[in-house]
Length: 236
Image (cartoon, helix red, strand yellow):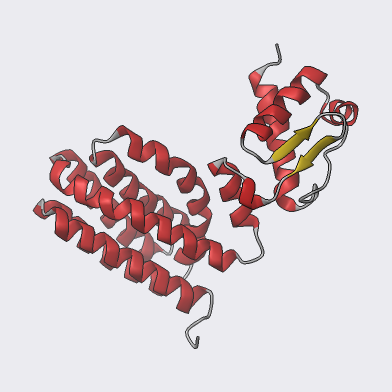
């Protein structure tokens, strides 16, 4: 049996080539022999890696013909779809779509967290907002992003629903790069600090509807900042 780590490595390498366009949509993957030689692995490992991608509908294995890359619209693996979307030419559209998904998930999470959060989780959220303020004052982008991400992670955990964080985790990996892009603009940091403070106040009140509205307002501000201050769409 092939070692799972090797299988994952080969599947990841192939997915990266597909996402980048090195292996184009509709094109055939190299033969098993070529892939074995390139990656220094056995045929069993290559076959398992291809099975991994086929299970996500990234590729289609056609007996006697070869393995072909399927269009993005056919893909069912969340990680693969996120990678392809984030790598796409219309990066702005992908970023706005991610905010739409965040709005759907995080507004509901905020409502649940308002009713279920502990005092310790409130204290963690306060630390995150203070950390964002300190990072902004110090012009430390990396620290700002870390506290921003942690703030939202704490809210997801505060829902008390184990599925929320698990479902959100693949999105979070992609969104880290997006946050670094938007948070590099200092006025966006100022808006984010204000919005996070309002979300915190709503969570502290224990009012689920207020928390939902506060998070929705935060997502609206984030989308507007992205369009106007990052993508330069203010005149559209």
